[in-house]
Amino acid sequence: MAKLGRNDACWCGSGKKYKACHEEFDRKIEYYKNLGHLVPSHRLIKTPEQIAKIKEACKVNVEILDTVAEKICIGMSTEDINTIVNEVTYRNNAIPAPLNYEGFPKSVCTSINDAVCHGIPDENEILMDGDIINVDVSTILDGYFADSSRMFLMGNVSEEDRKLVEVTKEAMLKGLEQVKPWTFLGDMGQAVNDHAKAHGYSVVREIGGHGVGLEFHEEPWVSYVSKKGTEMLLVPGMIFTIEPMINMGGPDIFVDEENDWTVYTDDGSKSAQWEIQVLVTEDGHEVLSW
Image (cartoon, rainbow, N blue to C red; front, side):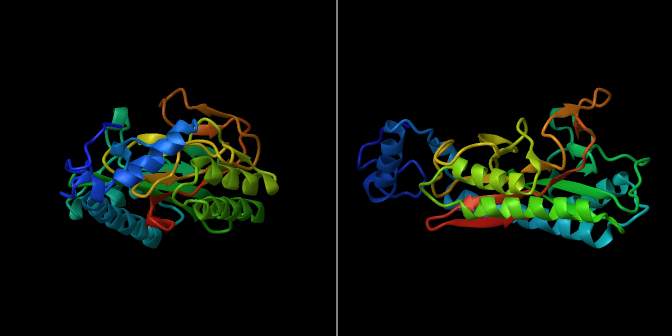
């Protein structure tokens, strides 16, 4: 972190002198750094103005997911979901973040049953009775990013599949309970992992959450197979996703060779994921998009 004089303008853009703004804050971060912990850079700490803009993007993201929730049904294609996402996104003068991101061809990820993540909408992929599907929506509004996903149960879903979806949601919320300033990302990751394993499930290791707000994917990378007291220090102003991918079977995965995007469970077991976008606050956390 750049060293500032006490009477210099604070790095956060508040217009206040450093000594009256973030000097003590930075000293606390430096203390943890000197203990050997990974700490966030100033760029990962969002200003009040940036947070306000990110929240506006999150409102659109939630509206998109709410609209999908209202309209999703058996017999609909995943391309129909893509159409809904586009309609609501562009109506709000926003941009779908996944579209053309590193070559991704659609505006939303739709991952059914044994698809762990990054499912590509297709007019020939039809939602069937008994399916479970994750719809992952990411939105850019005025240059700021929002990202969250939900699971949907189609019709007569088996009890074991319902349990997987519910326990995955519970695991995400167990992790959320651990998000508070001056603790560590590993506290959250272990809470997620412990809850999933207690129910006999496994957690995907290779794919995790991420910082988000000024970019689609920022630091830190967020693991759900981490340990309490490890990973990056959490401080007020950080924004990241909690999005564990939990498998009914083993944790191993593979990427579809045909589209080079969609990730599947290696053993063909079902997988579930919920994703929320979280702000670390002075006294805990705030969920921005769900």
